[in-house]
Length: 376
Ligand code: SF4
Ligand code: SF4
Image 1 (cartoon, helix red, strand yellow):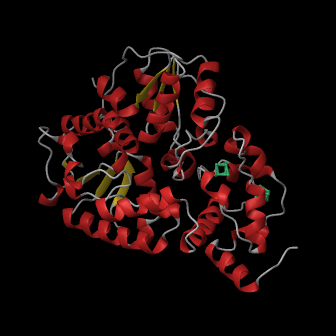
Image 2 (image 1 turned 60 degrees about the vertical axis):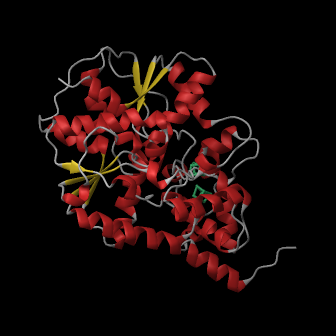
């Protein structure tokens, strides 16, 4: 028997911004969800949205969603499906129903400033010996490194590439070093909204002390969070992912590129850059100069790109069965790519792992490293 509870309905409705109300249960979201397509456990978004409409409890599958927004591109009622997911996660977090690993992520950010449990004093090890300015001395550009790039050795070459390009182009930039703290995206994805506000206000104060006009990030997850959340909470500085920042310099003729040895290359659009922030053609224009053969497009491309599987806090959870990264790499193989270039540390890690563990022989490269190798 279905028991409807008015009080609960009010709470669900307000936490999800009433987004579910216009859904007419067509099921297009479920039909287009790439996780629903590959996962045995299923992620039935139509059912989740229906639960929100009725004000019912919903938890388990919520944490499987990558918040990639692909379903939203097909929803005839333009439901803010990810808002529904995040609203329901907020309720689950409040009611202590979030997975243990997600609670740990939030605690790690609280205690160590990052979701990986890395030591605060090791955040800027990647920059040792590079002579990068402390942003608090006053800079035009604050380079925000992000937790994934700071603590994952695999991403350090990307950070060195970004800072080398900036130095060679004479950009006045600096970093916050070991005092940089998580942008809070995992906290937002966990639904811990109160703590998220605190993180944003602390980070905004730290950014303001540098006097920076532009915040440039290594991860599109950080730039997306700054642009779409911090800007509503008082951040005045312009926010750019490094690919956007370099593209502006490229268009102005300041970043000069030459053809490099890379060929048979496809560009994988990170969801947060393409679908959330609508930045699609810039990386392709730069790569078209660099690659020896015309850029290859995969079946899902641009704003219809497929998630690598790491978004929405999935990086912190374990899932059984088929992986989204495998599906994406199979698409790249089907399109004839020998190289895949992308611009997000999660995407690089997941796609490279898929290619390596399955011995596909397809190279997965970070865009910054490719650009540094092609500096004219
Ligand atoms: S696609 Fe939109 S209208 Fe259709 S079931 Fe999903 S949320 Fe509802
Ligand atoms: S946001 Fe992405 S992962 Fe989540 S339901 Fe929509 S298509 Fe599936």
